[in-house]
Length: 315
Image (cartoon, rainbow, N blue to C red; front, side):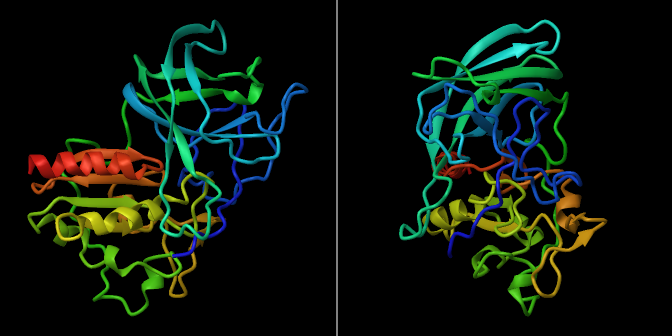
């Protein structure tokens, strides 16, 4: 597989954020707005962040984001922390400071280095629904640029299928049912190994199942494109013990092009059946059909390995 050019980042400084979203407003091509810079910023200092987490809820959350410099180039591997504030618009009150870890993404083709080599992750705890403020503190950076502060909308409950739910037995199309794999897989070339079973058949197989709603070609954020590359690198390690299924979030036509409706990408049938509003989202399902892990946005190989190994050990 060749790593295609990812769509430009949607850089947001002070706005309610839902990056990587498949909502109607997010399905259009993102703007190419340059990040806000400050006079003290140097070319290798981050001045803007892109939030990759598409949904934040009350309780513990895996918060994923990227950092970019004044030239819109990713700044990876920094030592940073995240400070969380309640009531940021009226009376900002510090809740606490949380560790941040840069998590590298492995890629199947080393001859074609990717634009995005990893993501930053922090485990955040939200006590209640509402708007929170987040500030990224980078070691060695004297001032915090406006672009490293962001407002976060936290919901009382998540949307769609959640951990503990029974996975819907969706009749997703398989390699035996379609003549042109490009109608169900936008990768170049498509990956038939991810379409050998329907979700319904996988749930009856007696094996754990991984289902990833991700689109290689029509991702709406710079940080969600690598998800299928992640699957490709770990699939050989678990082939035969875990079912791997990739589902295009958006409907594709008979030429493999995304279908638009009123100027936005049209959501696919299975995407709607699972009640999702953003992509990518990856689920791990135990042999009984119960969802045991749900990963918003890009998940790294090491995170998936840890979760899959735990699932196999418990099976």
